[in-house]
Image 1 (cartoon, rainbow, N blue to C red):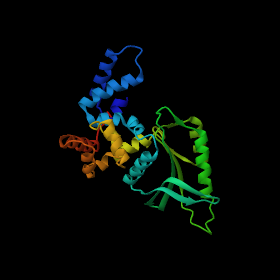
Image 2: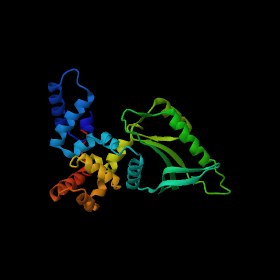
Image 3: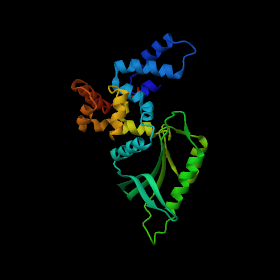
Image 4: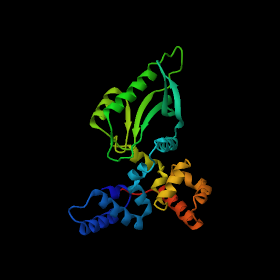
Amino acid sequence: MSLQRAGAGSHTAERIAETITSSVGFEVSSSEIYTKAFAMLRREARPAAARYALRRALLEFGPSGHPFEDFVAELFIAEGWQVERRKIIKGKCVEHETDMYATRSGPNGVETIAAELKYHNDAFYKTDLKTALYVKARFDDIWNCDPKTQNCPIDRGMLITNTKFTSQAVAYAMCSGVELLGWSFPETANLYDRIVAAGIYPVSTLTSLKHSEKKLLINKGIVTSAMIPGKRDALRAAGIPAERIGAILSETQSLTEPFSHV
């Protein structure tokens, strides 16, 4: 159940589910159910409400994909990677701009990743085979560079999206060696799991911020809730009064606290 996955707790989740079931008709849409559940959860447990709304919070990064790219970079940094954004890498034939280039030292030496990020405003849109083919072709050109004339800097190539993949895109990527990271793929350590594990949430998850305030902060490059404590001036510049700034900082802190899925 998505409510429990967000950390609502089994008793709270059951009570919300029972309340909604008894108050809606058979023709109610999933969107209406979500709205009712979110409103109830927000009153009882803001951190759980923020996690419950995480998928929709990512959709608020639009319309351009740059805030999502910056958010994923912050996620990888929290996981211990050194990250360069929109890096130019020379392949065998042409140069390529990768959305994210990441390196990390491990037991077997320095590991390198180049990632192509695809952002979608529509939660139901799926990244398809055509995109996977295009990304694989770019990585092949980089992988096929001549080590005699240049450094060939990529061990792994990734395609990352905020939504899902088609079954054909998954089959092709698994066969061809392109790694996929999406909202619910792979089954474990997917985008949702990694966000929660790292405690790096989109600033748009904060339920104490108004929609207009979220957009203003995102436009200023503040893409994660973890950036908020060091950006009080930006909050004041957005016209947020001191008492609300305190509530926002409190919610930001609460998102990093551990929670149970059961």
